[in-house]
Length: 326
Image (cartoon, rainbow, N blue to C red):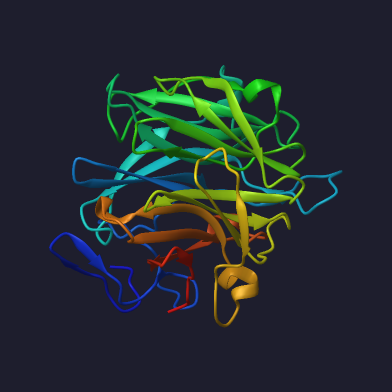
């Protein structure tokens, strides 16, 4: 187990008693074989009663990419891992969902490149599991969304290709599937100055031309979108490289907006640095209303394979988002 305190499951509802973390306590997220979970920039899929955790595999030595105007620390692109759980506590390692290799004939899957923030959604019409991710060269010159598909939730996934949605660069990204089955890519664009929300095709395999520019010139990244009681929420991070900063959130009546900004949702000690973490995903718990899990990374820029995680359950109270440390 990897809990500080504990989660209790009652009537399929996850009751908030404490945050899930592995940084301050030095207790690692571990799988059923006792190995540390390796799933960074993660997303979560809930399918037929099972949670599937997908994330970046970070192994190998960290190095600093030269000739950059920020601290561009990297490890070899390790592909995408997958873990499964029925209770968010006990995790089975399902193996590598999307593999990379040195000298891969598929450019985007070469270990010399960047593969980040994988997110998987299920298409009820096609029966396909669709993975979107940020794929890039080491100096962030490509700035594309990559796509892979599978017939099984845990994979393996087959890489389809990469794209700049509507010709625009795409960096930190997430995917959001709405109640009506429509799905959206949300990504930092325009040199990270402005985010885009782009509707996907009905099969989730292509960006459409239906998109919106949001949080214009706010310089936000690491988006995590979710919905509560008909209202859309997005949590984002500032653009400070690997260093933590103050998160912000906004709300809207539709994924395309208009978006109203509300400031930092985090409260208490170290809220100004998001409890030393950066957002990656918000998971609705058990498909219940008003119960969510905030998922974040605590990056170790000098040794990225030792980066850790922070997960905090929270509720929406009268339409207001406030997340407290445990």
